Amino acid sequence: MFFKKNRKQSAPADAPAGGQARPQVTARAVPPALAGVKHIIAVASGKGGVGKSTVSANLAVALRERGFSVGLMDADIYGPSQPGMLGAGTDKAGITEEQKLTPVNRHGIDFISIGLLMEDDSPVIWRAPIAMKMIMQFIGAVEWGERDFLLIDLPPGTGDVQLTLAQQASLSGAVIVTTPQDVALGVARKGLRMFEQVNVPVLGIIENMSGFTCKHCGKETAIFKEGGGRAMAEQLGVPYLSSIPLDPVIMMSGEEGVPVLHQDKGSAASEAFLTVADNLSAQLDKHASAGGKEPEQMSMTDKGELVIDWPGGEQTRHTPYNLRLKCTCANCIDEDTGKQILDTGRVPLDISITDIKAVGRYGVSISFSDGHSTGIYTFDHLRSIDESGQQGDKGQSFSV
Image 1 (cartoon, rainbow, N blue to C red):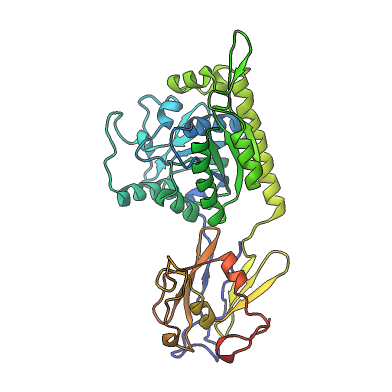
Image 2 (cartoon, one colour):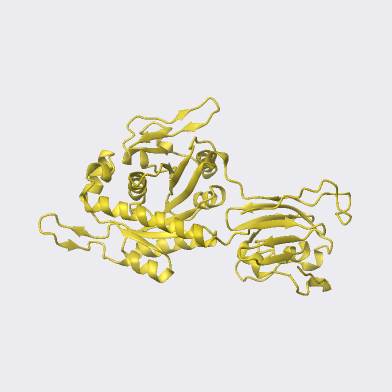
């Protein structure tokens, strides 16, 4: 997404009183530590116990087997699993002279985890703000360098960690891991919907623990039911990346810290992870060619209007007054009833925009001259309140 920067140095004739320059639209910035990463993928589950960390570790190795350079971020601050999954032993993350963290490399994968910074038996007893600071360190202060993929092993749920990563890490997409049971599928749907709401593409669903095949008789048993992940993908209109069998070799690989592809490359489990890697890569190529919902350009006019150019040649135009009236934050809209609680009569007719900042891949935060700054305007919402060629509030007309 490209945001046009105002290059005009002197204030325009119709600038706000006092000669204030029109605000610059701040682009969605990629943290410098992640600037060399082509694809940042969140691996999520919604609930615990579905084998998300196992899938993350083995998918990272599968992508490495396909010739990609891969990093892995363990974002589960309270229950880090990757040091054990990848057999880090007593290895610890390093610190550079610039106070940057250096990942540990195991099985060709560079990875970072809170488990690489603390003693093995030390519990993480932190309040949420401290844990979030560590997440921000992982985003902005790790030497990831140049690589094709960075997988982020998310903790269960749809809370602060997930939202922060969606807003700050410039995610290329998300992968949802579930098991076939209805209870897991229901929670996985919530995780999927969260990513949709913040405009992070859902690249596919993986059904883990799909079925157990007896090595002696060859009979397959659906211990946790079967087909639920595929059915959910079809129902929700997202890709199905593959199923991962319930195989003892996967359990042993996690216990021994040796990924299944390095332990038994010819196994059905290894083939399944390679299939997921191939399908994930294909989905990324598909999304890259299709384009996204993000604006191609956003700019401010001399009159203080916000102009947005969308993919496909569409353009929308927004006055500060109308944007202020259409804010959907909790200070302006009753969250229970959806009714407007903003006193529109107290909004100045000459209100202006003082700042615009990108929020993740799904919207912008706008600050106004009346002091209001808590509204996040999603791109879908901005498109729905287009004023181009329409009669605006208070009798003002606007045209492209």
